[in-house]
Image (cartoon, rainbow, N blue to C red):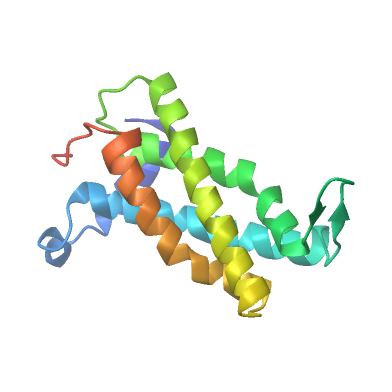
Length: 165
């Protein structure tokens, strides 16, 4: 493994210390770190988009009006999609026997489910519970992470062994 993914994998593996060996597999640990990196990237991009790009504006497209927090969410999706797929494929699930194209299509399907879940939870926290949008986006994270991990492991990168060296 070479390049950025190889370097990142080696750095992550430095922190896979003996107490963790008994709690999680190396694959789960790598997935957690990659997921955390992508989550933090998403939070930062959401904050910047919400406060400086969207800046509280509602978007009226004639047929539908989009709330500021929803516009902020959808403005960051291409970045988090690309980063998430790259990290999952090249760091966490490197031993999947599936072709890259198959992985990409499956990742898109599972990612769309995660996006829908994120959208619904964000609307719930902001529009029903009246929580501010950035904390609401953070509150959606545990739900989306659990869904995403299960989809990546058992659908997108199915067959990737835990016996990573």
